[in-house]
Length: 147
Image (cartoon, rainbow, N blue to C red; front, side, top):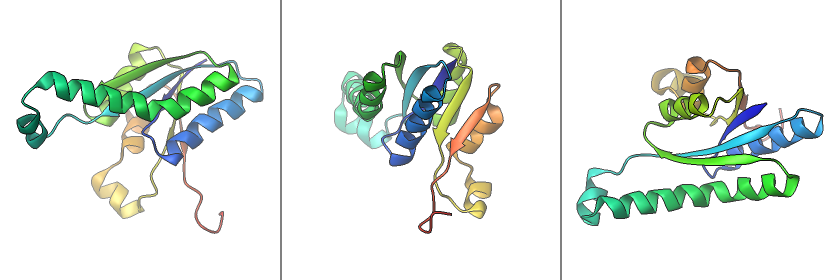
């Protein structure tokens, strides 16, 4: 089974990687696609950099840097994986990556946004959950009391 693991550098995205590794230890055969989506450069960044190639290079390096802890975990566990750093709207870009790599499942973290905020603003995990054609497992944060 090929699993898309979006990694943004947060602890919650790393918990999604840990869940995939637990599933593997419990007998699921899996390979992974580690994905990081960088937002497009702001107008200010484009004006300051003067060179779109510089922005692209910095963006790609930032994405690879964010993926490194997940790569280390998968390497240590002997899991086959591919990496993808992309730019664009995170939710739509993750759906595109999932389809392009023929992923069978997505495992991703969710921010602890309130229900009202999530309903008003939406979230990447919520958008992926509703737009994905494959199962999506969302790893949620545990509150301070562990409930």
